[in-house]
Each structure stands twice: as structure tokens, then as C-alpha cells.
Amino acid sequence: MSGTRARSGGRDFTAAVADTASVGLSLFPLGISFGVLVVHAGLSWWWATVFTAVIYAGSLEFLLLGLVASVTPLGQIAVTALLVNMRHIFYALSFPLRQVRPLGRVYATFALTDEAYALTAGGRARSWSSARILWMQVLCQGYWVGGATAGALAGSLVPVTLHGLDFALTALFVVLTIDAWRAQRDLPAPLLAAVSFALAALLVPGQLLPGAMGLFTAALLIRYALHRRATAGSQQDALDGPPQHPVPAPASPSTATAAGPATAAASASASASASER
Amino acid sequence: MPTPLYLAAAVAVSTAITWGLRALPFAVLTPLRRSAVLRYLAFHMPVGIMLILALYTLRDFRPTAWPAALPTVVALAAAVGLHLKTRNAVISVLGATAVHVLLSTFWAAG
Image (cartoon, rainbow over all chains, first blue to last red; front, side, top):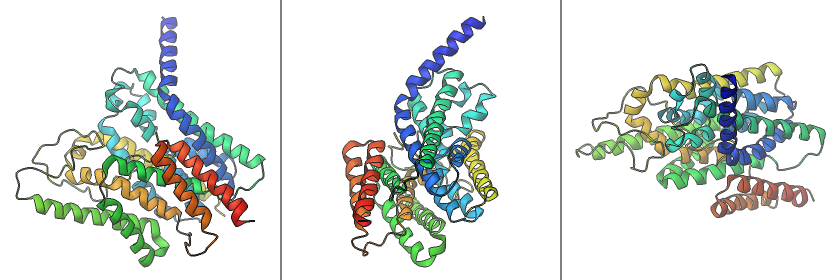
């Protein structure tokens, strides 16, 4: 009996190694650069392990380095975490959590990163066992934590300060902007974001990040309200956004109305994380 | 310099919010599906939020401070160019960062 189980367990692990190979190739090197940045920020090397193992949300960890370095108030960190990771709300729509055994679901939701979502998207994981899904997530986190720890150790052993390494974060967000743009090609959104940022820089320079994100969210909600009013006369419910929705949301009833306290629920990004694709 | 206690609190806050955002929706899926405004935001926000984050990382950048601005300008062009060409985040990020490190070490410092 146990032999059979061990054999099938081994198969699940092997399958998960293959599932995660491509993701690992990007997670590990980006983990290394995160680890180096942790040491450059003046923190002990093991904070790289703590950040990546405990928070486990790549783009937030990169941002957090800058925030904690300037001892940003915890409230602002909370708002940033909320806005940057809001997109995860929509992963629940398609992630095969029901296939995971009940105890494993605690970890499966904790480790539901962009990569884990991407690897199970499109019904690919419909036949995966509980063990295969969990191994996939454990391996993804392993690459990320391993890379960050290796980078931080290397960074603390080799006392060479590389100027300009923090540009990795800028490059990461530039890349994610391009990816998000490719997914939607909605020009007003980045324009509104740029204007929001400029306004926030003028009006609330001390609260630049939450200010810009708040203004951008408000601008989108106004745009949504205008869009709704413009299409209110037609029978066609135009609220669901363009048809090529990046989040595999199920068809909503055509009577859908703006429901509930969704104002704060602003999805941050379809594709953010320390590593992408 | 942040204290260990502050760092631990920042990690705890970030973890709680991130995990909550990942786990709670499984309990309240139906209202989420019905919320048209949420889906509108989910569709239109990502590119804007990412752009704001990119701009935020450049908040201390002064384009008029020539030639100190050069490494950033060139590295930005490298990031955009590499990503449009390769569509590979690792190549684009590591390539652009390497350009920035090399230029700011040998150009700005030298």
C-alpha cells in the first residue's frame, strides 16, 4: 500500500518539477537580485529569507524594501500591500482549490501567486492531484526563497557595492507595465495613471504612492460611472468590460449592477510579482 | 535604520493582507462574480498600477541633471527595447539592470 502511495507521490513530484521548470528559470535569478538588494538596503541577509518565505508576494517584497528602509508607517504599508495585491482576488475564480485536500488548502491559498495561478490557468490543472498542485506551489516558493537567500548571502560575503542595482525594481515594473498593456491595450488607463501620479507628486509629495493609487482608482470609478451612464439606455449590459477579459471570469447575468462595497477593491495588476512569465 | 521589531511588524502586516486577499475570495466568490465595478477595475487597473509603481521607483530621478541622468535614461530604453523584442522578463530586467550598474559605476562615478 505505502509503496503504491510513494510511487504515485514520486510521480506527482516529478510532474511538478516539469510544470515549474520555466517559472523557476525566472524566479531564481530574480530572487538572487532581491537578496542582493536586501543586503544593500542595510538589512541582515536572513531578512531576505524571511521576506520571501513569509510574505511571498514578489513585487510587494521589492517595494517593501524601499518602504522599510525609510521606516514608512505601517498603515501606509498596509494600503500599499492591499493595492499591489488586490489582483489576487480574481485568482479564486479559476484556481482548482477544490482538488486540494482540506489541510493543504491553507498552504495552497497562501502560495497562490501570479505564477501558481498562471501555471494552473486555462483548465490545464483539471486532472492534477492534490499533491501535484501542492508540489508545484512548494517548488515555486523554493526557487524564490532559495534565490533570495543565495543572493543575500553572496551580497553579504562579497562587500562590493554595485551602484545602480536598485534599477532592477524599475526595470521590473516597466516590464510589467508593458505586459499589462499587451493584455488590454486600453490607452486611457495608463494616461489616467500618469496624470494621477503627477497630481499626487504636486499635491501630496509625502504620500506619493497611496496618493497616486487613490487618485487613479477614483478616476477609474468616475470613468466607469460615465461609461455606465453612456450605455444606460441600451439593453446590452456594457459593464463587463471588453470581451477579451484577462481574468477568466464567468459570464455574469446581464442584469448585473454595481454591487456592494467594491470601491476599495481595486485590482492592482494582472501580472505583478517579482518574476513574470 | 529600521528596528527588527518594526521589520517584523511590516512583514506581518504585508503577510496578513496578502494572504487575506488570496484566501478570502474563495469564501465570497458569488458577490465577486456579480460585481460589475470590480470586474471593470480588474480589467483597467493593472497597466495603470504598474505604471505608477514604475514612476514611483523613479521619484528621485532628475532628468535635467545631466550627465548624472544618463545611466537611467539608457537603462530605461534598454528595458523597454529588450522587453518589446524578447518578451522575456528575466532578460529584460537583468539586461537593463546590468546596463544601469555598468553605466553608473563607470560613467557617473568615473
